[in-house]
Amino acid sequence: MTVTSPVSIVASDAPDQPDRTPELDGLYREFESELLVPLWTEIGDLMPHAPVSAAVPHLWRWNRLLPMATKAGALVPVGRGGERRAIALANPGLGGRPFATPTLWAAIQYLNPREDAPVHRHTQHAFRFVVEGEGVWTVVNGDPVAMRRGDFLPQAGWNWHGHHNTSSEPMAWIDGLDIPFQHYTDSTFFEFGPDEVESREAPDRSRSERLWAHPGLRPLTQLDPSPATPLLAYRWEHTDRALSEQLRLEAEGYTATTEPGHAAVRYTNPTTGGDVMPTIRAEFHRLAPGTGTATRREVGSSVFQVFDGLGRVTVGSASWDVERGDLFVVPSWQPLTVETEHGLDLFRFSDTPVIEKLHQHRVQIDPRKHA
Image (cartoon, rainbow, N blue to C red):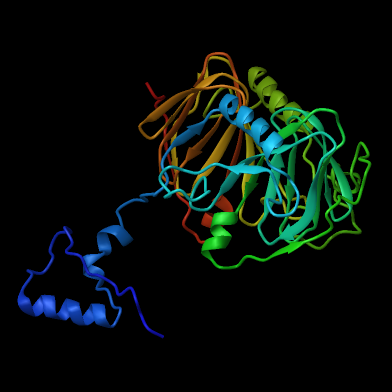
């Protein structure tokens, strides 16, 4: 095989570099001809003192995304070829790639009335989160699952799935996947299924909910742990109730917290108690009016969507006033602070399970509020 793009060794500005001499330059040319790179010229980039992500903090406004998705609904077919009418968030620090962070993919997906998003499967783990609307159901391995505002709908990799809009109104939601991570590791597979979604009716409760959506109860017929959750819908009424009760109990003096007025829950796999998927963690946070979070840095990246309310978010040196539907990115080790005067609900997903499995997770919390 002929190498057409040899490496190039660039002089480093790192301390304690050897003096450039004709002999050293000759050695570097020998390295280049054999596709070798000395660590001493690269250590500053490869091994920084703290994580330095190529991704940057960024905000996407829902009130700008939704009109563009509506236009796409009129102009772009949803069938084979485009496959999904999904519009990915492209972090401005990642060179135009359709990636929200180096490991996470997020998109707004739009489905017109009476329209099918055809069946397929892929190794990427995925979920849908609904910030507004209803009328669409997703069918996973023949199990129809209704989608409504506030619902979190995970779907592990390599499961057949399609979507159908039964209503007379269009519907949009966000998709989250681990596409960048699997793309980087060269581990992806994809396969087409039927063009038409197989089920034309959606019951109030899917088969997965009938089996798994009983809090604290695990069916003894299903004792083997699963790497991803078998529960296909985490309903908003349960999430809302859990958050509300946390805040009520705090007000009644029954629960202690380092951040008063901040309730949070994590969606979990009922077969293990761990994360819903091997590569994605999903949470929901609620801040009571007049509260704020501590400033927090965390190894690994995350994407947030404002579900309801108003607030101010600071990520690194960027600050935004946010409202319902807005999405923002927190790159690895960038400080995050959230404040609200009127109350704020936030959905969050992250790559934390990957970071934890690699034993690289680290968190730094500054209890001082952001000024």
